[in-house]
Image (cartoon, rainbow, N blue to C red; front, side):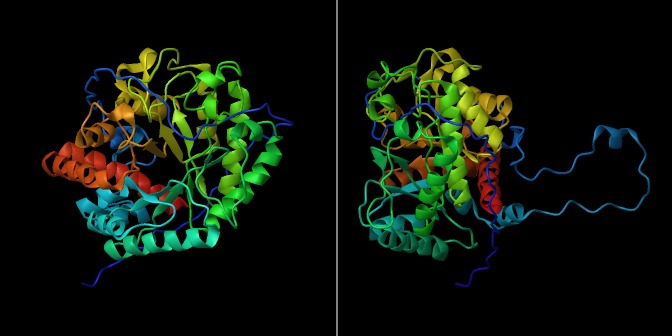
Length: 428
């Protein structure tokens, strides 16, 4: 069957960076630790993605400004409608299945996708994927892995839209890609001890290695602040693995911005994580339930690395899977409109992609079915859902399709999220 294709144009934005003479040590963690469970409250969307006040919203019908509304029209000649952007035109040409595919990111092994993986991607018309696990095969082999999945996506979609290809290349215990052509990255705690200019230069080199392999999104840097070196071993998701850049928000902010700027320089989108912070918890949402932060507030000083990263122009923020009792005690962060719409969109003015942490295999999500997780994440203001376990993606995509097919308001939420994704792709 012949397919009409609309191409998304690309360009790269460089993050501005205030270079500090030196940074304090920091750290970052790789695999999950335990978390507790609690009875969730149901998040009622107070507004849709499209009403979040972001520049990346669904194409609105033009409305007159206050001055236009109170002044007579200068002429009776009809005015032309504003021209559609490339992203808006692409969205209009996508089917509902393809729109859903643009707001999902599926995990495939970094060592190579299976025929079943590629069949699933094609059948569900998924538009983004994550290289998971560990690979020591090197740069060229990784590029071949990426190209094979990209070819599957290109063939399946009716519109020519580039895929977001992500991985976890933080450093230390969290480095998915190794081997010939990939540097060995030290832990973030070590990186945080370098001068900002040095970290930016090295991150740019690491980013070039990823770009050469076809990776255009790095789920790093970690912007979580661990309170102290003495607490770090008890902080299962971050400090235990030395994933933190340091022990105060200023140090973490400077280092995470330097890392982000280097990645952007190389053409790779950085993802600041895990909003609003995992540095104060003791359990890991990947391996435990009821992981709860009882300290972080809506205007907390520990939000500085996220606030500064957003102000610098980051297009991606990952939301954590924890509970935050002083912000929204009833809902985990990916189900919390207060955290995603209220804090990220309204308080911090974030206009980019709010991506989830893994919502398929994380123990913290155990109390909810796969379909419920997906619907609640988008209803609360999320933009892209990460599901590392490809086998669970049919249930995720199916639930979103069923809900959007019968609920026009939810369909508009999916449209707004898809448009936000397309606009970030257009801006690359």
